[in-house]
Image 1: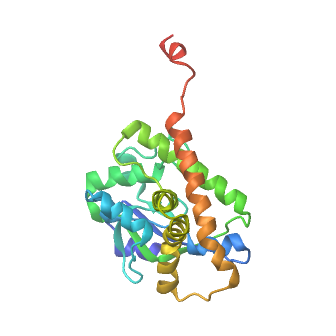
Image 2: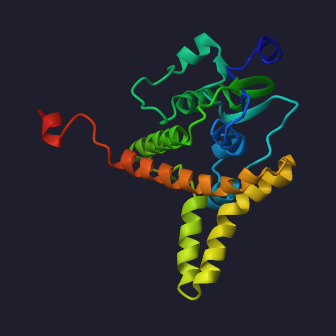
Image 3: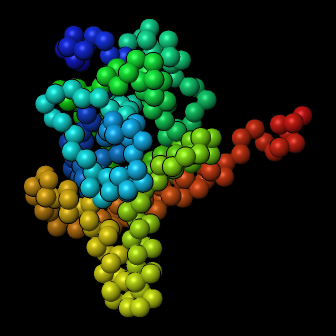
Length: 246
């Protein structure tokens, strides 16, 4: 981390990569496949199209592995910042709920003030994160992330940050299933498995028998996140409207 700051003294925020520490359980190996703590690429700050947002969930972008690169946002689990510059752009918003993106809002403010190169990821800075081995807790975390995304969308509108693979599989299966239920089922399975196929081809991972369940676990993860999003959108703070008026 010190080397990263020596190499990029003009940065405001420098983050790193997060990997799963000692993956032994099914859940921890699944999180190697679907790591929720991956930096958001800089293209998201350049007015990306709906198509780009859609495709990136089926085919996640390849991030550089040898040189520092600008990002849309760092990951809160592995980040550092120039204190004075971070405070100069407002610091963290303490009113945000978990998953609403306190690091995202800080990175946005830093880029607006100091430019794209002020928010960087240095791939040399790697954190081994001890994820809980429970799949139930993984889905609870996804629900909380979804709720935070719903809160953010309720305040800011724009394109919501939603998982699309699971819902796309359901919608595609229902539409095709009107004409042929076996074909509809095949479409749903193929849609769910598409990101898994990309991951396999990129990483050349050993295909353990349990990995066949990863797309199913990811499907449930998407639906849980969607439920969290709905909860965040419908959340009402500060009591009823009359209470706030008083």
